[in-house]
Image 1 (cartoon, rainbow, N blue to C red):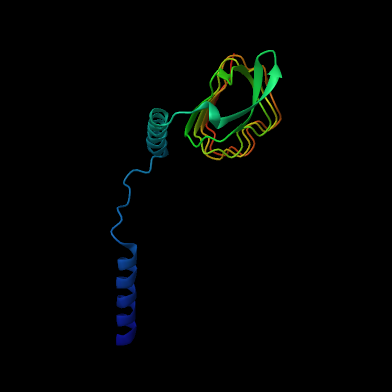
Image 2: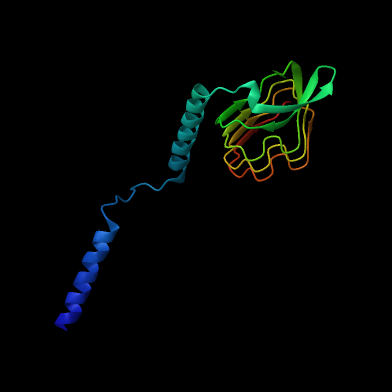
Length: 158
């Protein structure tokens, strides 16, 4: 009997040591957690906007003629990508198929000149949380935001 008591005492001490000194939250209100996460998300986005600049060389384009182009690729590692209205002397009017595939960006802002998104334009941007599509958008392709699992907000034109 004495061995059993000692065994359970030792087991209890090991469990207490393994658990450490973790505080148990007093309030499990899910809205508080959501509000804290929203503030963290905004802070993360604001910090990223201030730190990183996008250059023209981060984009690959195809000329559509008449001074217009479509973005067909992006190699930027920025967390916030603000697409310029013009690239290589041409107005950006479209985002091509898989143009922004697998980027680590958390926010993408398109200019008002963009008129369309091709199929799978933002395919597998798993960290993407926010997209502002600008006011010129007229058409979105099939599965434009395929596998964008973190996406929380898309601003569409009226």
